[in-house]
Length: 354
Image 1 (cartoon, one colour):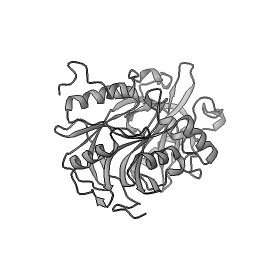
Image 2: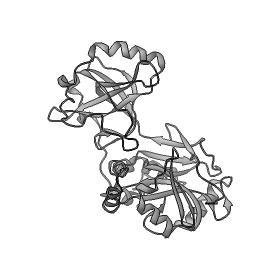
Image 3: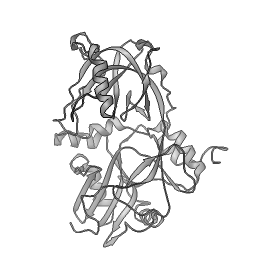
Image 4: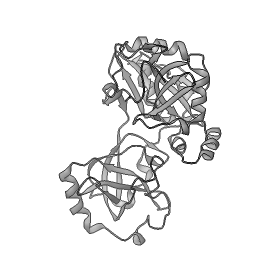
């Protein structure tokens, strides 16, 4: 492979802001698997955000790159699975599997798409220092009207349309939008884009913990919510505590440590922690059960398939809440919508004004 931009390479990143900034290019925030595509003839590399190879897991994407993209190019984008008109992150995660036969089965059953949103090189031309408006125009030239596996992300300069997307697309499995300056040059590893995500809070049962692997104290809290049948489901984790707080939590929670046989998750009923990681079978997912008597409020951005998609943020303890009252019913449920129906349709009257 001999391209003007070569792997390994860090993708350009985004910083989180609470409001939509004016005067920028706006795109849906796809939130699948970030992927850099490098193609030099028949030599194709799909590289994750952490420089892990993705090609073996997505043979249909490799084939799409081979048949739908220029022979020499580098693109930045997201791998997603669209199922039932929605982006389905659970199905996407299932694609990371060690068995080649299973990968082939899933590629046929739940095929993925590569949604491109930037062009970093084309033929012998390095585009990293070109402004976004030029890169995106060139991206449209090579992708618009192309094949079914490699698509260009929709984009708009209308802040009102961006607000409509932000509200409506949550029901299609997306959790926000991304804003980019028109003059933005591509800066690997730098947080120079802007992401605006939904943020909500939920009261959850603290039903377990994982110890901090880099030292003393608690690394993360394991969170649970009850369903209508009174079954406590593992829904995610709360982490990123400072050093002093990790040690403080270890002291505070020590009296609540219990035997797994006396714990709601000990019998494997409902969704429980400890599922092997598809990214690394060797990853330590051991957890320590706690008596489910404490409630904490956490901040989260998106719930998908009954789980918080990302690590939540601790807000405060809720000693006033009965753990049994912490159920899925407290969470808002955006109306389900068809992804492409929203993107292909202008906002309803009155929704397009900033």
